[in-house]
Image (cartoon, one colour):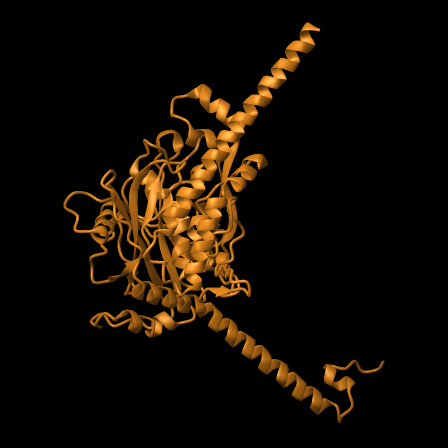
Length: 480
């Protein structure tokens, strides 16, 4: 029986074997290079976070002054930490706290296995009738998403800790710190944290933008130490530390290697009647539900371990991330299965998150026609016009209706809204000369909601005319 070659090299002549070895060495070298690049990409989330925090630190936010008719304000805390690798050397206890630039030069932060995380809270208490409106409670307004009837809690109340500014607060930052302490027991005044800066103020209005409810100010905090800090969330509130990589991968998929659960886009459907009608008007709700349908908002799915499973040490107050839960399952007792469920990040919380992620993206570019190219890859576009290039956070709060004709009429009446967007793009084209002097966000919101109100009025009238004509025709048919 002929000898079977043990390696592919034996199939070649002696003169060709060295060439194959050289080629094989090149393949190994390229593979090693790819692995090194992959290792760098895994650490690129930290690099993107560094870029974002430095931009926030050096860019003054757009401040919206409260009008005399509505002085209410609120603030939330966007808390970020970097979880060190289990194999990383512990940081000296007596080491002085670093500055922002020094923080990203620390060995445990630059470790390829370091994992940046962002803090969300889930409020399980139900809001009145489930949706923001003129009588909305503050926590529901800050979440931006409350339970419509028939909706699951997984689609609601995933938000940042925060609340209303009270008399005696020294400013928005103080409000964010106080509310975070009261809600989850995390003291942002400790030396472990540093306030990076503030994102742009935003106006919180009623469902159709007819009345201003408050001005909301988001503040960004960074934990400078690697150790987990104790928390004590209030009843009905759970804490979810979410890997930033899962969010970045949803809007900047080419920037990160998918080493953790990937953020996937979804949507949340809200009954339009619950937002457009009074709370106890049952007949009107049915009428609006039939004539207008529902509204759909974009959302990012977030994987969270099942909170009913004992995956954390006794006495711990926050739930692990899915990555930590998978590690516990791998290293835990045989047969232990860690289940997970999905939460949806949407509404105001998604908008503020996109504001943060937009600072991680490369600088905004333009086409040959002068149009601004979006720096985040969003799978959705508002009905009235493309605003995702200049304000992706606004694109996340603009609804799309289930009936196509409603969306059509919004587009028809959205001419003024599109003019505002083009002017906004022109200000960016001119190096942002007008970007901070004008409240582009508020102007775009008011014009979009004006288009929605006109569209709904036209749809109501056309539906009513159609029903009347149908009744007339039916009456004639019966009488004949």
